[in-house]
Amino acid sequence: MIAFAAKEIDVGEWKGDMLAVGVTEKDMTKDENSKFQNSILKNLDRLLGGLLAEVSSEEDFTGKSGQSTVLRLPGLGSKRVGLIGLGQSASSPSAFRGLGEAVAAAAKTAQANSVAVVLASSEGLSNESKLGFASAIASGTVLGLHEDNRYKSESKKPQLKSLDILGLGTGPELEKKLKYAEDVSSAIVFGRELVNSPANVLTPAALAEEASKIASSYSDVIYANILTAEQCKELKMGSYLGVAAASDNPPYFIHLCYKPSSGPIKAKLALVGKGLTFDSGGYNIKTGPGCSIDVMKIDMGGSAAVLGAAKALGQIKPPGVEVHFIVASCENMISGTGMRPGDILTASNGKTIEVNNTDAEGRLTLADALVYACNQGVEKIVDLATLTGACIVALGPSIAGVFTPSDELAKEVFEASEISGEKFWRMPLEESYWESMKSGVADMVNTGGRPGGAITAALFLKQFVDEKVQWMHIDLAGPVWNEKKRVATGFGVSTLVEWVLKNSS
Image 1 (cartoon, rainbow, N blue to C red):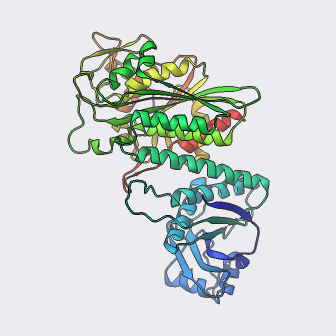
Image 2: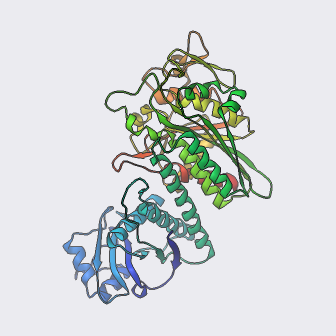
């Protein structure tokens, strides 16, 4: 773990391996003698005998987002000074998370043990902004440093041990915020590693074991109830068990509950995550280019966000809120015991489903999970699922689709996402599209046509939610995976934690 500290010292006096300065394009303006006008850069440049101004001109470093330059120096407290571009202006948490990630990349290259970060311009920032920016820098650094090397025969461990944040204040409030950033970042890393784990390692049993570990680590506030196939059968979860039927790996229904150790409960919430540890598509097997069967270990990305949030909340321990974390975990495989196209399943609320496509299985597992969540007496439910390719077609790889009949719940979650910096977009729940989901023999089919596939999937889930409960469905099929780096992102964890805290305060 990295030790974070907030300090108020002159940048020239800081001692360590690397001093990183976050600069906007405006900070980089120079006077007619090619000298910096910004006081922090002017001071550093004076200590370096004009080297900083020279290098930034020679390398055409203008402070654009994504630019960085690092100098190795004798004679200063810091062995290296780096300039990291923030673009025209920086005012959002995601910009400062990006700064943290850039600092992590520079620290890796320099094999630095100790790094300090300072903003060239921090005057005029409110106390709240300073707290938010410091915590975004800290979490960006942790996430930027993280490399999942568990399955590599050889790997280098990052050297970075300490990060000092200079010029954004000091004191207990800021220290608490940095601790919070650390808790959430480690939960995001946990979520990433769950999604990265291949299906031969992360079976439904292994996912249930990870959930049980969270409960035992935070047993003062979290308890676990893991249901076997037999117990699910007693609860009449025919929809979920239909999906699980083909696999040799038995299903496990995961239920964690967070309750503060004291004080009244003001809000009862549920987070429901899709937990398909592998999805072959079943008899409607995934074939052809773009079917992505080789990355179908990511089909439990929703459950990773939910369990990551549980881990963070176990550490943060917010008062006044009870949270249920629910995952109907299984594999969608092919065998003589598996469900066939055309089979009719009965969900735990008594509704019947004609399975016209075995590869629309996530919604079948979520149906019983949502009924179970409503039975816990919660007021609000957010479900997260890598549900449809249609959502990626609509919103691209980095934005999650949000479906909810409740404007109030939408407002809460979008406010949480502004703090987390994760990207969401609200989509329509167009009731007239339900026509395509009607069956001749059962209450519904499980897929409509290709048009509006993410919307009809959301409308299907709505059939299993009590009307008195505020409900939101998040389709995170795109942003859960970074295609370029071929690794998981940990998407969803930080927004869920922020949302729960909003309901706690």
